[in-house]
Figure 1 (cartoon, one colour):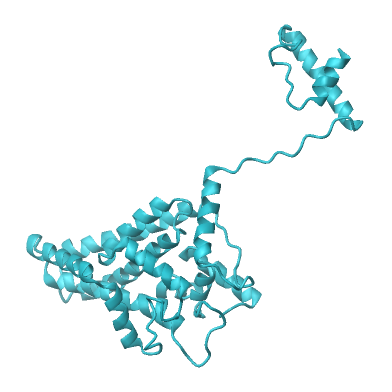
Figure 2 (figure 1 turned 90 degrees about the vertical axis):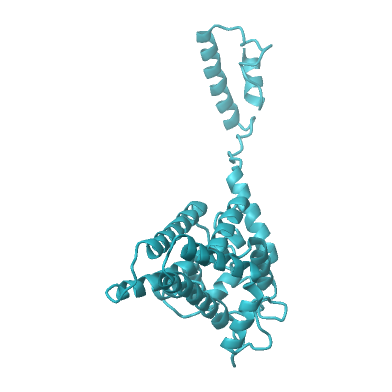
Length: 334
């Protein structure tokens, strides 16, 4: 019996339940007694140093955890920073859930305002204040939709779910102005690789300080004939098929879209990457605004924290304020 207990105590895979053992045919009561005796013997032998302690349990990473690590690695390879002190550790539990929930809220609000403005609102002198408010709100929500699509390009909307990122991003870009997902995503990743250089599709190397000329170049590169066909189709369907007044279409669909492109360009491209007498501190050729959190959210969904975004491209828009605060604490602000 003692020999059997020693074997049980020293064997890492032996079990009294395995077939062929002397315990396999014991009655249940005797089997429980044998297991207790073997466990006590094993503890005694371990205490005496005859049996090594069981190594600590290390849980196998879940599929979701592996997906997130793989996605983060892929996204950082293309945009890896050469300034290790500037990169900040940032992680949000349930990032995919938070990101998609915020995306759904922004998109649903945009659709609700849009359909009310097209089919439920009469534009007249009495409703003019409401029209102005809805114009401003729709402009800001349009910026938000594009920023969510931008996060999808980096995979930070839903880390580890590339198809979900692609589908959400493609739907929002189509809704925004008929933009194509693949073209916009590839161009934006090129922007990160060649920020502020002649190879940067967002940058106008000939006019790095001129807002009007740079914005004109920006529109020519991104607003192609497909976008024109999409916008004209929407306008004609609303006007000719559904009888929506042109006043509603122009004031509450056309103008917010145009103003949102100006807002995105001014706060998300021109101000962060424009040339001035001070230059830039690193290869990202980007600077951040000194706005507070609320002003940053109102201006461009925190896209004004642009240097932090370039250094940490895997951080979603709603996580950039935390990166900004970390940069301020560490003294790596640009």
